[in-house]
Each structure stands twice: as C-alpha cells, then as structure tokens.
Image 1 (cartoon, rainbow, N blue to C red):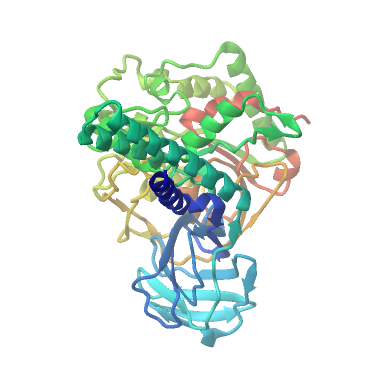
Image 2: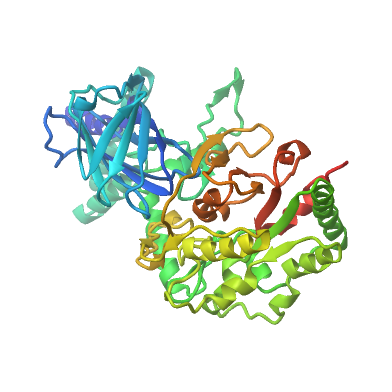
Length: 555
C-alpha cells in the first residue's frame, strides 16, 4: 500500500509539472507600434535577457504586414523572462530604400518615447527623430535597429490555485487507481511484462493531447477563423447543458500537437491529390495555386450568370452613378479586373473543362447591358491576355496569391489613364520582387514557399503623400481604412471605390492625380464625390455581383 501511494505521489508531481500551463499561465508579451511605409514589410524582434548586444540565443518574434493597408503593427512573443535589450530587424518590400517611420512603441503596459537618437544604433540605414517618430532611411535590403538602453520586458503571469488542486486530486486518484489495476493485472491475470508496458504507454499517449492546451489564442490566422471559446459548466448561474459539446469544440481547437497533426495530414493529402481543394485553395498545375471561394470554379467555367432580377439591379445602380456624373461634369469608369484563373487557365486543374467561351462570361453579360446606356467600362481581360508573353518574361499574377502582381497592375494602370486622358508616371523596369507569402500559400505550412521573380515597375520620382482614415460608413476591418493621397501636380481629382486589387495599383495612381481617395466600399454617395472630377469603381471579376446589392443614387 505504501509503495502504491509513493508511486502515485510521484506520478501526481509529474502530472502537475506537465500541466503547469493550466494553473500557472504565462501570457505572451504584447508589442505594438505604428509603422508608416508601404508594401509587405517584415519585422523581426529579438529580446536578449542579458544587458548586451549579443543576440544569438534570445527570444524571437516575427510579423509581416502590408503597410499600405494597415500601419498598426502588433505581435506576441511567448514566455518572455525579463528581457534587457531589444533588436528589430526590418525587411522592406521593393522598391528598396523607401522611408519608414516608427512611433507609439508599447510593450505590455508601458509606452516608450522615441525622443533620444543616441539611444539607438542601426545597421544598414540612417536615423532621424522627428516629433517622437523614428524616421529610418534604409541603405540596404535588410536593416537592424538596436535600442541600447536597458529595458525590463517580461510576460505577465497568473496563478490559479483552484485548477492546481483539481489537477493534483484527479492525478493522484487516477494514478493510484492505475497502479492498483496494473498490480492486479499482473497477479490475477498473470499478464506479461510486455502487456503491462503496452498498457502504460497507451495511457500515457492519452495524456499527450492535453499536455499543452493553447489558452492564449483567439483566432487562427492559417484557418482565418475564430477559435472556440471555453464555456463553463455553470454559466450565468445556470447549468450549461451543452457543456460536453462546448468543451469538445474548445479542446479540438487547442490540444497539443494540433498544428503538427493538421500539417502532416494536409501535406499527405496535398501531395497525393493533384486536384487538392479545401474550399479556399485549389491546387493547379506547375505549383500554381488558385482561389476556391466565391464559386471561383463555376466562374472560371462561365456557368454562373446574373439572374434577370439581379442584372437589372446592378444596371440600375451603375447607370444611376453614370447619369449623376454626366449631369455634374464628372467622368465615371467601371474597371473590372479579370480573375487569375481566366488569364492563366492553362495552369488550372484538368478536372475543370471549359465548354463555354469567356465571351459569354458573367462579366461580359454585365458589360453588354451597360454599353446600351453608354456607361464607360474598362474590362482588362484582353490587356492581360495580350501581355502574358512579354519582353520582360514576367508573369502578371502571383502564382501563390489571388491577386495580380505590380507589373500586371501597372498594365491595368496604363489602360485606365488612356481612358482618362492623363500621361502615366515614369517608371523603370529594373526592380524584381519575390512574393514568398501569398494569401493562398501562407495559410498552409505544408505548401512550399514561392521563389518566382516578378517584375516591379518602379516610379522614378515619387512625390505623393498618403494618410489613412476610418469612416463609419465604409468597411471598418483592419487594413480597409480610407486612403487619402495628394501629389505635386495639377491633374484631376479622383475617387476610387475599390477592393484589394487596387493595392498594387496605388503606387502609380497616387502619383497621377492631384487629389485621390480610395474607399473600401461599393456604395457610392453623392457627398463623397462632389469635389471629384473622376469617379472610378474597381472590382475583381468574381465579385461583380455586389452591384446588385447597392442602392442607386437619387437626384
């Protein structure tokens, strides 16, 4: 009896140690700051617990964000114990050597003032302090910033005595019962040692999934969804009769090894299935990836059309904008960006055989009706098709992303300015980019990273300045703020109602107009276009059904 008790106590201590993240929670260190720049920019944080500049074996955190869409950067670093020094490695996108401004640094609950230039040292760039903003002038593709003053950064902790007692009691009772069972298993059933070992290993394996429960995460970036929240057994002073189902959903989203299990399963499925499709991504030929949302496959096959009712609603809306603009001496242009699968259909899976010509697509159905009302439509399908084989030997869309690249966007920009009657900005064709993390492959850690080089037309003398604003009438999602730009020219003023395809257009568009505004919405309002000379609605082809849900402008 004493021997069993002693063994049970030892097992209980081991269980308590293995489950320490339940009763002794170390929350991730939260770091946030503002970054004014452009394009996909990568920030890597290194935290040294020693008061020196040796950043070899340190805590590490990384985040990559598009500064065109979002200038607020936030990342979390797990289990930080009293960091003393901070180093930030920054990798900006092409075109290189653009200015980057950092401000409002906060770590946990403290804010750090950026008012002392001597507190920083930098490799590969020059620094300047301006109104508590750290202005960085890069001189290399990657540069590192070190804060030389000692800091005191550490994760907050939470000790839960109730959970500790529950774990201790359950572990002791279970281990005592298990040791008694194994003893009886040996003496009464005359089981072999191999049977006992197998039984012990089996019970140990049952505990592995619960050895590390992720209690910190609220969302899954890879799956683009909110994780299930823990619902207590007693909820609002009432018994939660769905506790079993709620707990199962919570546990399934957070058990130890979940990411690795999904990675292994997804990797096997992805490699064995040439037509891999998980309702978000569709695997094409030659390492091409395509979007599978929004009925993209049916749109590629030209099977989906506007219903008679929805087509009329879309026409009524777009024609009302055109009539209003013509009445008030404004120019209205509808720009439709072709889907990637329409331009690079030769890389689409052989499973999808197109029997209906693109001339009978849903986009052409809308365009045919709009032209009856003399609405100016720019459908970039032919432009993209005619430039697939170009002298620069560059693709027009990213292989790992749903969007066109900067060269594809630049070709669309040229066509738009031809319609408007404005001379395009001067660019050089020497820059290249590698879009390693697209919105398709970045979701899946079993899909290999991109190595393809894409042409990046670079503006020679940029002058435009842009700011971001939130508008309660528009999309308030992070990265969807209104973008307001001013340039040093006397060209017309323009308002864009746009989606994400405009992001690659923005470097060129903002230089081409004296005043340009970019709204992430499709409901045009008279008050928003009064001061403009040109109104442009830009929409990717698969999303043009949105116009059937908009309200026409009334005089």
